[in-house]
Amino acid sequence: MKPIKVGLLGLGTVGGGVFTVLQRNQEEITRRAGRNLEVVVAAVRDVAKAQQLVGQQVEITTDPQAVVNHPEIDIVVEVMGGYEPARTLVLQALENGKHVVTANKALLAVHGNEIFAKAREKGLMVAFEAAVAGGIPIIKALREGLTANRVEWIAGIINGTCNYILSEMRDKGLAFGDVLQAAQALGYAEADPTFDIEGIDAAHKLTILASIGFGVPVQFDKAYVEGITQLTQQDITYAEQLGYRIKLLGIAKRAATGIELRVHPTLIPTKQLIANVEGVMNAVLVKGDAVGLTLYSGRGAGAEPTASAVVADLVDVTRMHTADPENHVPHLAFQADQLTDMPILPVAEVTTSYYLRLAAFDKPGVLADVTRILADQQISI
Image 1 (spheres, rainbow, N blue to C red):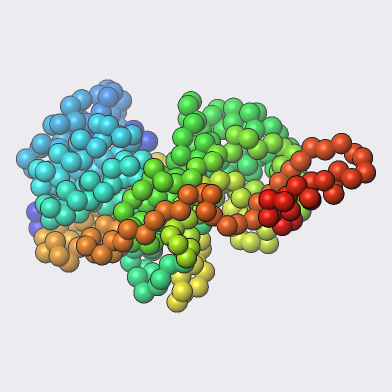
Image 2 (image 1 turned 180 degrees about the vertical axis):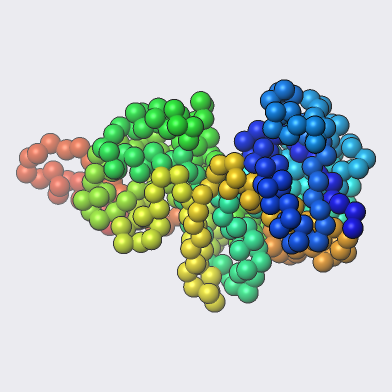
């Protein structure tokens, strides 16, 4: 059969990983897809660097429009990251009748509703397994494997940078700033780590998971987001003494009046499996009414783990390339006209337990005063 022709928007860490995996495992991938997958063009910033990787096999351009407007391309793979020009390019690719595979969680968390609507209008697929938790197939598990379930809640360690920092603070007794510098030196944290350490990256991913789990439109702007920058070594030590570990969790939970959508440091009992996920690893827990609790764990970033998810999406799209659009798996698991407007609850309406650390004078009556103040606010300790 005629090969499926692929265009890459970006040939950096992830894009390079995609090309490498496709080349190395070409025979296996073709046997699974039923057709050969051929990268024919890539848009890059650094032409010389790209040509070192792909040689003369792939057309290299600095103009991304040349990819999305290429007449032979069947699938556009967007691994540029960021909001723009990624949004414009993805919409243009769809307008031109090309399926899209993306690893861009920020793009989908903010502009996903618009992008999915355009794909439905054109009868095309947008696949995004690599957008959440790297090589862990959590999107497929949630969207397809758990279809029979009413999802009750999702909780995950979905930012490897923060998990690495917290693990190092606990294991080595180091301060946050020192571990962050080490993470940057190792390439685990960006030069500007704001999206990671302030919880924004995790909130992007959680927004997508919540939409698939509960059948609601993506609503990143309504998520409560708190990072790890205020945590101290003292907090880590106290948590350990109390039998807990601190992890930055993304939590999406079905409540009586809406959906909780929150990212913040969380104390997890050390006996829980997810409390023992260390370093740059990711893990996601999903609670379904029929299946109970399921856990998905693995590498959440890196060239080949992420490429694994991108290539899996390419195979899925190839298999469905000629299928009736009505038979495509819905982008957010639920049929588009069945998405609900369940409200996202503001954090002030979330009922949960809190860890509170106070500095107080060591004198009689202090604890009684604290207890009384909290009791006046209807807070039980």
